[in-house]
Every structure is written in structure tokens, then in C-alpha cells.
Image (tube, rainbow, N blue to C red; front, side):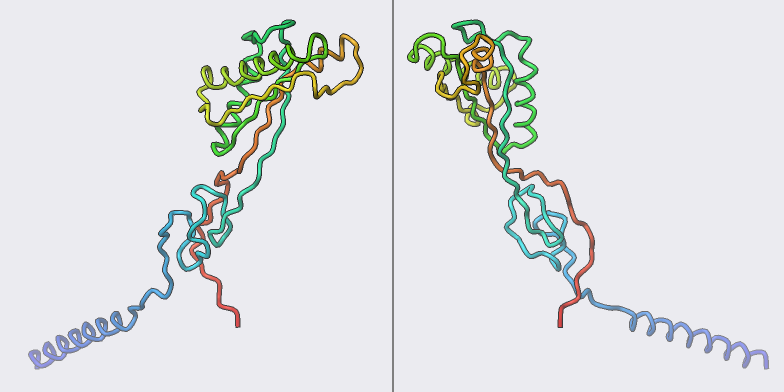
Length: 202
């Protein structure tokens, strides 16, 4: 009698084990969506619509980039000595601000514009304004390690005054340097890592 009960118990346990194995196999599913991120932009392939987005560009939820145009003008308040292109070290922090901006946006370039007062001859002022623009680009390249291919210097002489009056104060203001930064902002300021897929529209 005891032997019969033991055999039935073993048979029941064996039956449960077989049934559990079948249930596990029935629960196995296949992955319906591609969850890989082949271009490394934080968007899974199942959502990806733009595989050729510029590397590092801001992207939306579908991996498509938003490249913003940069066009910034900044006056550098350097007081040059009369008839000179010398830049005193006190003015370096202003030039460094431009360098910091260029490093933040590595696809940008800067044009340094040199302007003079209307005292002296136009010929001399044209040369002087170019020398002053060149002096600023030299500081950017040599002191702050900005690649020279990103730097352009143009001297406008006295042809673009910001104040028309011919007072001494006006001529001081007209004797200036302006930095114009242009290019594209491709900084990735948003990365989508939501592993979900929109339901297809019907």
C-alpha cells in the first residue's frame, strides 16, 4: 500500500514538472520592434526616420536634427592708442569671451572687423584698421588656440562710423573692433532614449 502511494506521488510530481516546462515554452515571444541604435543618436531603429543626421546635432524624437543658424555680433571695447594696433593685456578677457563662444560652437567662424576714426588720411586708416583686426585674430590664435582657418580679419577704415558727429567722443567710439560669429549650432542639447514605438495610424 505504501509503495503504491509513493509511486502515485512521484508520478504527480513528474507530471507537474512536464506541465511547467510546456508553459514556459508557450510564454516565449519574439521581439516585434528593432530596439538597436545603429547610428548612436539615442533613438531606436524602430523610431528612426533620419539616419544621416549630422553627428552631434540636436534631434527630435525620431532622430531628425534641428540645426540652428548662428549670427552673433559683439563689439570688443578695445581702446587702441592713437595710430597703433597694440592691444593691452587688460583687454584680453574680452577676446577670450569670443574664444569661449567659438569653442562652444566648433562649426562657427568669426570675422573680426577693424574700424577707425576719421582723423588722418583714408589710406592710413585703411591700413590701421586692418592691422587692428589682424591683432585681435592673432590673440585668438596664439593665446587662446583658435584655429586660424576659423578666423578672418577685415579692415574697414573710417568708412562705417557708428556716430556721424565729428566730436572727439564720437571718434573714440568709431575707433573700434567688432566680432561677427557665423555658422551652425549642432550641439546635441536633447537626446531621446524612450524605448517606445508609435502605433501605426489607420
